[in-house]
Length: 145
Length: 137
Image (cartoon, rainbow over all chains, first blue to last red):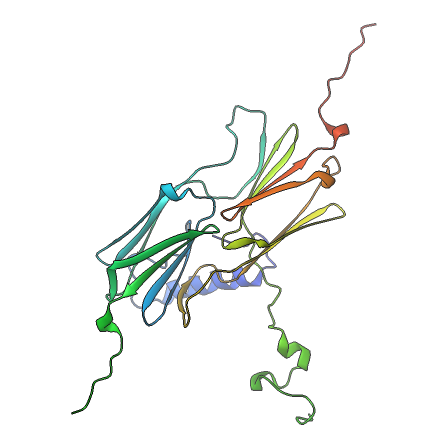
């Protein structure tokens, strides 16, 4: 999403190259692909207790955001309205890079994600979804008799 | 190399001069935020997506005829977070634009909410559209 428009951005070029190579040599390609494109951009991380998903969706009305967790799939969907004027007015659109319209992204979560314990926060244009992991998946010491 | 003189903080970077060690090699790397730019008779409106950026981490600079947007995104992260999938790999956004002469860079106004920056750059009053009187001879 935050692609580089300028060839001198080394990170974006390397990232794209890495993705292409990864896709060419993937031994077990998931049916949902690598999911690198699309709005909103997503970062996923995990702690021993939870899975954290960050969706970068600035300027979305929280009432239009729909977050669902069902059978191990997290869906982030919604709509972002365009701020651009209607074509009848005498305004010229010079640059139009920002995403506008409906979006729908799906992520698979690991088996220990607990669908009963999900929290979502929208702040500074980032949707942060926190899913607790089921307690049984957390490492437990076994006492030796 | 005299190891006793310069304290080496990172053993792998021991061969680099000390000030290079402190700075990560790609510290100036930034993402290019997507923008929308619309022009009407009164001026130009620019919208930029800067998610994760709070008001105090956003800076707008106008120098000569160039406007630069520089922002840092910061989100409260839980302790011990291990990233597994990263699409936004940098916490910095930067983009610059050259303004043309008829734009009034002294009167730029900006609004920032939920990660969207809205900049309004009016046209200088002498550049506003004016009807030209045609004298009939």
